[in-house]
Image (cartoon, rainbow, N blue to C red; front, side):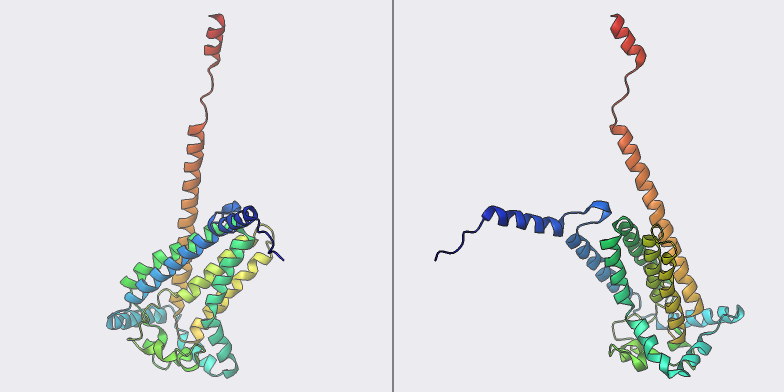
Length: 286
């Protein structure tokens, strides 16, 4: 029995469709999946390297900045970090949920990004660029203002993550030679990225489900509480995160409006010039 003949034309069409699905852009503002993944991985790798480098040899300055921040918070009656940390240690049943919340927020970030890409393509470019701009804007702050977190600079704080870390990296969160940047408390990017998740969800849902669009903001509120009770951030770190997200959204919005005006101007320049009525009449008389 001879093997069935293979329709090479059909195989070629299937291969072309598969290649198009991976490499070609989509309608509604979605870029090509493979190109998008490669670009985001490059951004993440670059951010991680620069973030880690910003924490080299800055322990003394980071501690001094932390003490200054603590003095400001005391003057403003915002120094609640020690009390919040002691509250959590007094409620041991809540410790592991707090650790999971703190450690697994990356899953939420990726999930939100994929969800917006697949289900809300019209919002994807804006939320993606907001994420990228946040990374670009915060790196100079980490370099210029290293800051020790409360767990390293505030006496009496219990380092919850170091003691109960689900990833087995608790010791690294106190080791300056671990390759991690331990001195980037200001602003809190745990809160910053979580705020981005809330913004992305709100932006995607506000048109079709305005009431449901408020629900994503619960995630950053929970994260703000978690970073305080685990001794990882100050109240003013959270305020810094809110400012970072607000500025990033403003930058992306302004950039989008400028690009829209340029596209409109380019479209008008390509339109044919209208014929002058007087010229038509002269030609007719001639």
